[in-house]
Length: 531
Length: 73
Image 1 (tube, rainbow over the protein chains, first blue to last red):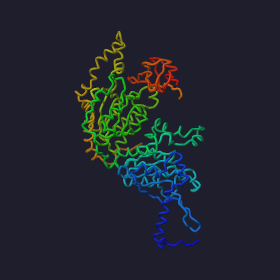
Image 2 (image 1 turned 135 degrees about the vertical axis):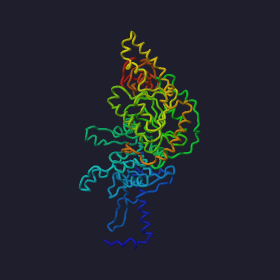
Image 3 (image 1 turned 90 degrees about the vertical axis):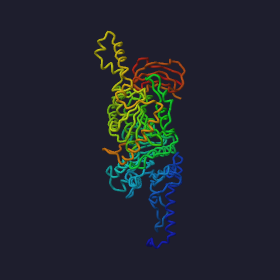
Image 4 (image 1 turned 180 degrees about the horizontal axis):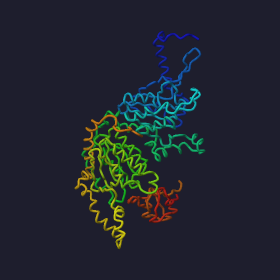
């Protein structure tokens, strides 16, 4: 064996050419054949994904040299297989963001066993985002560690040695967005969930607690990975992942869109953009947007699109818990979260899923000091045997609980119905509790119809014609349901012309800005952000 | 294209049936209206085709996802 000379005796040129060689090796990822296989599967490589995510030429790589070197017997370097994780920073719309993702072309993106991890929970990317208070984007394409490492170690590892503590702590400091771009289980799947926003490719990616082989072994069921954890399950049915994308490019675009509403961290205010849509824009069409009958649904997304800065909406969880609509949007260039009941699904009633979605979205807004606009048309919690079996009351009260803990300014506009405890979830009693209503607003602990039958049961039963008696009592009470009577009593703060909804809300969101500026920092109260 | 089951989008009662067996329908046509949470909830044709059967009548209570009929393509 030739003794190695100390590195200082090697000419700088030689050292630099080795550095350049090692960097080129990293660029090759798993090699030509593996990259071709990734492309043939309709997938981008992790480096292509990072380039597509960031502004042009903005990728600044971290830890590119990590890998497994192959050496001749005389210690001459033959090549380096890079670690199956690529990370660094990119700029997104000019703002620095940490990004990292498994490299599926290297050993299927499995965990790289080194004293320090590049990616994964507690890895360098999370530390970097935490330390420099930067957003983090996870490009998930792997199933985490396998049992193969047991033989290397000679022992099994207690769960949580590589724990999620840093992933969790990050959620109360910086925005975390994850794209699931392959099949995710284990640690990478866990980190996709521990995000403020997650997206997966419909038909192109899957996520689950355990994949088909484990299901087969545990239950004896043969299942297809798409049936088990495709977007139809993980996004539409379960809401595990927020949004589905048509392609990898769309998924990365959605992450850029999401981050455009987010501050870099909780110590900064949400980013204000130039706005050419006049904040004073009256929208007369809103006067006729509700159907003539109060028993018919309407398209609340249309209402939102007429109120917010034109084209600024970014909907979160559009296919899950559809009786409520949750969107990030802008008013006069300032980000706000819009939570609107959707009368086209369950008549707008809050069910277990829409309740869960409602809570997650409020927490997101509250964590990043984004004011919330509630557009209310809610008949109450969903009722019936099916709803009770799904713990609608529990999930619904969790919304009330979360609303009661909001610290961010809110504005409530009752478009039509606002009933019961589901109605309570649409305003914030801790702030100025500023509730506005269109003249079509109606509210109560429960609607007069039905409510009358219960409250006046004996009187109705004793009447010669009970149906007529019930109608008579309802007719007697109907005038009291006028929103103007409530405004007279100062139990709702104001009634507005639907056409002036945008100017009024733009004004309130602008007012919120000063308050938000003074309230910056981690959200008070226990728990922080829970996904 | 497979036959389409007409499914109840929400628990409620059948308020009004606006189609008959044997009728030709287009995807998205309103076939019946449920009453749920005091609202009129339209039930749309899942596919274009002919109404092969209707398994409910006006006034019937239905649970979410109940089959209300079938459209054959």
